[in-house]
Image (cartoon, rainbow, N blue to C red):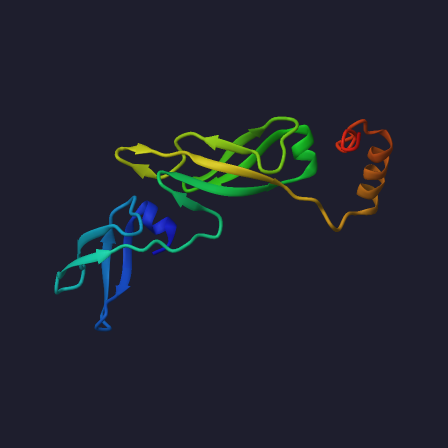
Length: 160
């Protein structure tokens, strides 16, 4: 089942091995490998034992009880910091970046992870500075000016 359905639960149409399709109500906070018992909504009212398999998600990776994701940021957001919107299982939240944020830096959104034993895990956000490949003439001029005036020299001490 999709991660969002595993997280929130709700009605889901499932296909059985014999070809029948049934609608069942799934509980929230399910994980892969979990066995659950549910009743079908159809007239038969069959009780079923289901083995849950949560499908991979494009953005989120579940490492119980934490939810991990990689979020791209711009060079200016990395250098200057600021507030950005981060997707969570519950929707968008604001996260404040400090000036000087770098690729690979991890930030924690407390209580935004997966439910587990009556608590919530955290969401771990790994930031990735994305470098633009297509820039406007104006942006190019600004980068050229920055190159002339910047004092940051990351390779200064590489050679003795």
